[in-house]
Image (cartoon, rainbow, N blue to C red):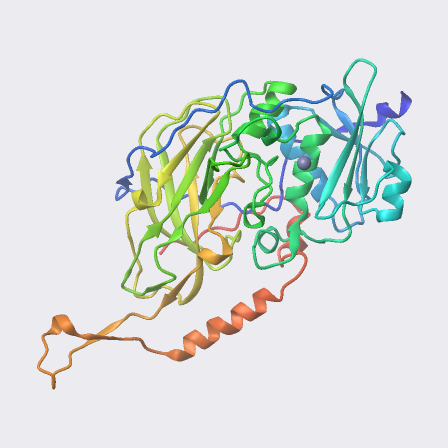
Length: 435
Ligand SMILES: [Zn+2]
């Protein structure tokens, strides 16, 4: 039809708001972290299956009006799929009235129950966050898709705030990325098989709902559309594994061994992390950097602590799980800033990594660690004890008070993060600070 002529193909510049940590040069002190503890191969071809075939590309989405706060986050998520699948998602414009049955790919926005019934013949189901309705064309392809978000839920552009178990807001970007997967024909992998791997098409617990495409997702869109070559490593500060008796995987956090660490003490880890090869080439010389950051998904004032090398060659379309203890321990310097910090893992691979926004991963909100003043050893002389049986005294309760006040402030934050002002102006790469 004529209106298809106005399609614009989106530049594959995805997630302009994605936090990225500039890696350090190769650290001569880097330890060897050894082999993964799990390298279970994915089923091949991509375990995704396509329902009603594929859409003609580029899909011309009737995207959100540019003055909505959700714009251009909708288009960034389209571009993100295009990084791997080529010219899959495009846009038409300007925004016009959406409707089911109009033969177009519409972002319906946040229709209420009455409008849902009017268009789709059914209202919102309980616990339904968002939905994509698709229609099949004459030759088995997808001829129309409409994406609707449930206005009964609280939506946020602050992905760190959304990906928390203790908030009621949901990540708009993560949900849009999932629904756009349906919009180009990708279904939930767990509907037809037992899934142990990560996917944007899974239903993970809330704290793992971040706008990230995993190896299975990138392979699915490559397999369905254009098999674009890409060289791409991805890291997650958690692991997934099979749930006995369940088709969705279990998600388990990586984090600090203890919730607090003292200056001049050392930080140890518990839990496992995973590295995925989301591209279609092999990489090696894997290095993982450990940082402590004042904000989850934030790069400002992140402090570099160490690098660990993983020498194996990682094949395409793979997910490897590493023991958190392979990162060893990290001494906390005497002048390290006090307060709540989040461990960030930053991935470096051999060659040019084509997509960097998935190279840094922060621990969950409930895996934060608080840096306390140095513990001072005092000997109980009157008791005649040896220095080995000293008493550890913690100083400055004022610092603890300040941390509590900050926690209250961040817990009450709603909506877009303070970064939103320069989100629209393009890629943000705040430099990390070295000790
Ligand atoms: Zn879904």
